[in-house]
Amino acid sequence: MNLKAGVSAPIFAGSVIVLLIVASVGFALYLSKPASESMTHTTTENMVETSTETMTQTTTEQMSETGSTSSSATIAIAFNASAGQMFHSGWLLIAPAGMDHYALSIHAEGLENTQAMHDVYVVEGVESSGSMMSVPIGGQNATLSEFEVGSDGVGNFFVLLNQNPFSSYESVNILFVPGMQMANATVVATASLAMAMH
Image 1 (spheres, rainbow, N blue to C red):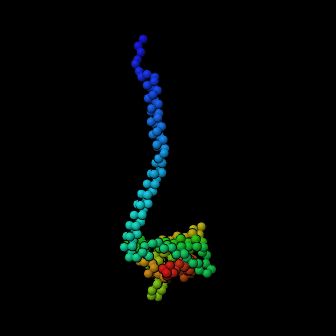
Image 2: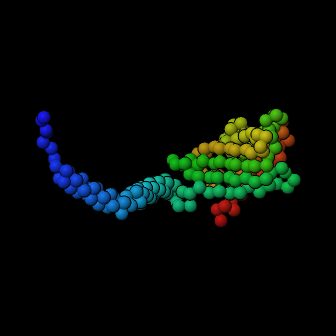
Image 3: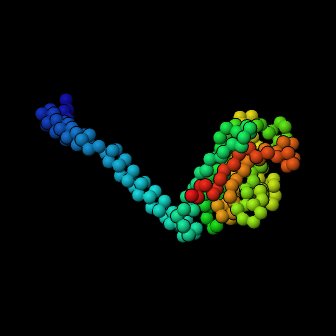
C-alpha cells in the first residue's frame, strides 16, 4: 500500500487559523472605514467644485457679453389678469441667450381652449418709445407670436429675440383672438417690464 506524503493535520489547522485571523482583521479594517461615505463626500466635493467653476465661468461670460449683472440672470414676471377675462395665472420669463439675444417664455393657465374653435392667443409687446404701439413680440410675422391652448387651459409660448426686451418694451400682453380676427382681440393679461426693473 502506497501512502502519499501530505501536510500534517496540526500544520493544516494552524495555517487555516492564521488565514482566518488575517481575513478577519482585514475585513474589520474594511468595515471600520466608511469607504462609500468617503467616496460620496469626495465625489460631491468634486461635483460642487466643478459646478461652481462652470457656473462662475458661465456667469462671467454672460456678464462680459451683456455688460451688466442685472441682465445676466433669468427674470420672472407675473402676469396680471385684465378685468373680466378668463385667466388663472401666468409667468413671463426672460433670460439672456448670448450674443445679444434674449429668450422670452410664457406659461399661462386658466385660458380658453383654442383648438376646436379656430381661436388663438397672441403675445404682443407695448413699445417703450415712440408711439408706444402694441406689436407682435415675434417680429413682423404675427403668426410667430401665436400660441394655442388645449383642453387643460394651459398655454406655453417661446421666442428668441435679437433685442433686449427691457429696453424695447414697456409691457407684454397676452391677447385672445376669437376666430383669428385681430379686430376682435381682447387683452387677457399683462406683465409689466418697467416694474420688474425697479
